[in-house]
Image (cartoon, rainbow, N blue to C red; front, side, top):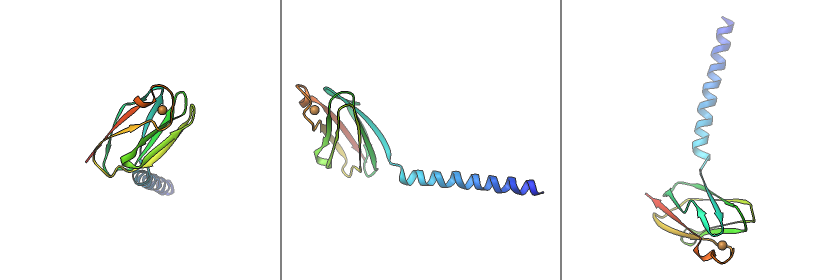
Length: 120
Ligand SMILES: [Cu+2]
């Protein structure tokens, strides 16, 4: 009898624990999107995000310092040589936005572009 109670109590706690952590994860964990920058491109070169949905953009550099700016969305993240940076934002406008490298990185710097599709 006592064992049964213990089993019940433990499974109850487990159930609540799983339920609570799932709930918290949905509320506090924005989607993470990784982008790799190298001379002279971003990988991937296109991303699709949902309007109104918070996102963490993780920018990694495989070589020199780079940046990624979406002027219309007020986003500008810079990453040091070989480093990783992240920025959290919520796209509030639907449409296509072209981001550019915001740190001069050499001859092909002007051609570093990433197209963001923000869908409703
Ligand atoms: Cu650049």
